[in-house]
Image 1: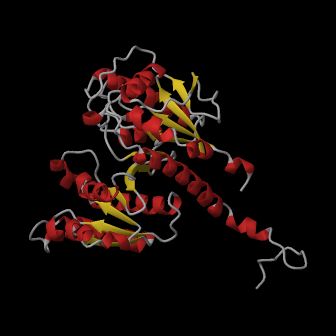
Image 2 (image 1 turned 30 degrees about the vertical axis):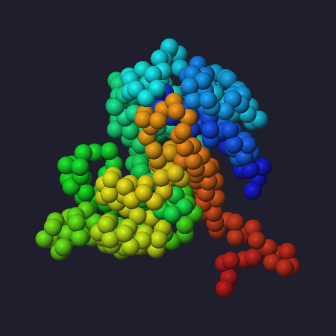
Image 3 (image 1 turned 180 degrees about the vertical axis):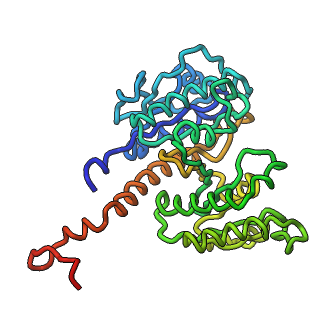
Length: 366
C-alpha cells in the first residue's frame, strides 16, 4: 500500500446524549494506548461537559487537545472539537431537550466535516431519539438522518455486526403495526441487494451467503399463519437469485434459526423487523456489538447500546462496544479502499504485466 493508504485515519466521534453514558465510554475507550496507534480520535462536543462527566464518574484524566476545528488536530493525543455554543445543563440520568440539543450540535458538526473530508469516518455515541427531536432533527434515529444528510440518493441499511453475527434489517424504527405493510417485494429485494453489496465491499466477503428470516411464526405454515413468506419474501429472494446471483436462503423461522445456531452457517442474516433481528444479536454480542450504517458513501458506526440513563454517572458503563465501533469503522474504511482498488480498471493493469523476457504480454492473441 502507498503511504497515503497507511496513514492513520481521523475518526470523528460524537458525544451523544450529554445526560447518558456517552462521555464515559468515550473517555474509557480512548484511554487505551493502542487507540492512538490506530487512529487520530476527533471528538465533537464540549470540554465543559467533558469535565463534568470526569468529576462525576471518576474517569481517566489524560489530556485532550482542545480545538475549534478538526483541521487543527494532534496525532499524539485525543482531540476535542468545541462545537457547543450554548450553556448546557448536565443532569445525569435524566432525559432533557438540552441534552438532545447538545447531541444534535455535535452530530451536525461532525457530519459537516465528514462530508468535506476533514475526518475519514464517523462513530456516534448514543442519543435519545425522543429528546433530539426538533425543527432541525425530525428523524427516527441516526440512520435516517444520515441517509438524508449524506446519502445523495442512496438508501441506508442498518447492520448490526460482531465476530459472531451480522444482522441487517428490512424495517428499522417503525411501530410493529406498520411492519407488514413495509415488507414488500421491492423492499425486501432492495435490502438484499444492498446487504450483499455491503458484505462484499465493507466486510471483504467474496461470495456472501445470506439467510433470510420469515415475518410470521413458523414461516407462515403455508399460509395458515400469514402469507407474506409465499407472496412477498420468496418472490423477492427468487428475483435476486436469478437476476443478480445473490446467494440467499430461507425464509427461516427466527426462533429455530437462532435457537439451533443455524446463523453460524451464513455470512449475514436479513431480518424483517427491528426486534426480530436485534434481540438475538444483543443476546449473543452485546458487549462487542456494533451498529453500522451500510449503503451510504460514508462510513458510520456506533455502539449497539443506548444512552444508559439508569447507570449514568456511576462509572460502571462498559466501553467495549464503542471501542469495537471504532475498530469496525477503521476496518470498513480499509476494506472499501482495497475493494475499490481491486475492481477499478482491472484490464489495463493486466497490460502492464511483463513476461520473463521483460516483454509486455499481448492479451489479444490466443
